[in-house]
Amino acid sequence: MITLWLLACTHAPSETDTDPTCPDAGTPRVVLPADDALHAEPVEWWYWTGHLKDAADRWYGFEQTVFVFQIPPYEATSQHLAFTNVDAASFDYDVTYVDSLPTRVVDGFDFAVAGSSASGGDGQDVLHGVAGSASWDLSLASLEPPVLQHGDGYTDYVAGGYTYYYSRERIAVTGSVTVDGEPRTVTGDAWFDHQYGNLLNASAAGWDWFALQLDDGREIMLFLQRGSAEVIGGSITEDGCSREITADELQITATGEWTSGVSGCTYPQGWDVVVAGTHLVITPVLADQELANDMKTYWEGASLVTGDASGRAYVELAGYCD
Image (cartoon, rainbow, N blue to C red; front, side):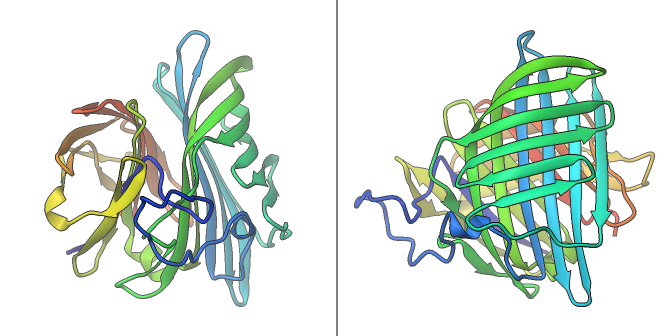
């Protein structure tokens, strides 16, 4: 059975929204920008994914993530970087662990690991990343209020543990990428997730995560927690306000699979999705977008959205190698 949370939104009410016509999601459990900063929680991550294009209309996908672990006596920071060159059909990645914690910054963050960095807060971030032969320098500016996932930004997991969780689902990106020594000016859209809490059981079970940015201005987030009794909940935005969805509004069907020649893990590849009456087809741009590493191998990659609406997506598949 699968535990599934679905959240879909163009933007959800936050503590900064004042529209009295939107339904009240309750007292926020996340307060920004204070909660952009590092917390004293067992597991925490700051997660950027995005789609970039250059002057020649070439498409690039990127992932930049900082994980922090505070599980006494274990303390560590991990950085994951990945770059998909869609037109060249290539994928580069790098995973680094260091046995130390980052310095806490009030109302924000400032990370530097193995030559890459991420700093900012309150929806204004600066990223420098290096993965294989690719590198990037990007400035990010959020275009919408933050989305407090699960309504108020908090949920308990059926399998045990809990998470605080918010997203910035439409972020304007400017900057440059360097591919095989050639600098290229880029623009695009990014998505930012920040989660913190007791995520150990959820991480051990694994999940499928989808971040869809549609050309009509909507964003959709899908999260399937594997290995638990089935529970369905979430929200969808209509007219700028979020509402909960019901189980009969959602169907997700994998349409194929791919087996890694490096790890031997088999992942689903391609999905047919119906959510609130909208039929979407999600297709990875490359089969091999796996980050194989000694700690936690997973698949994370740029994808195309077609069907009743068009757009682009990032998909993460975790727990298929455990």
